[in-house]
Length: 102
Image (cartoon, rainbow, N blue to C red; front, top):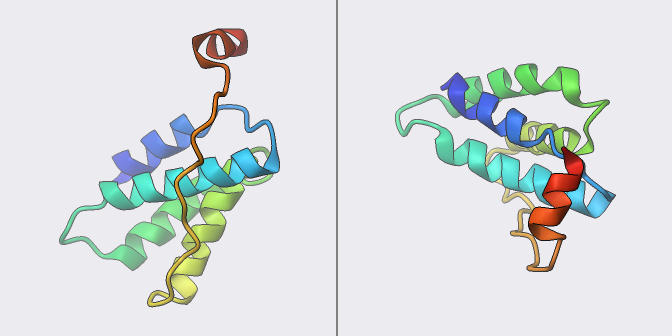
């Protein structure tokens, strides 16, 4: 179960160029983490564990802060739908931009 949060946090180590991009990445991370949960697992325990694992990175990574905020909201109001959306398709620089990050 911890594999899902570790992979998600690793993938969030990219640079969020804007608050909007951080929100997109945080929402995608939440959806990815949610999809990695086992069907017979306890959501509450998994969410608490994921939040504890991600919490040290909240101040240094805005996308992780969004991810943790979604975890907190889902724990406080489990039956209330979350405001989640897939990112709007747009060009982000492709391979050249990724190489510039290295």
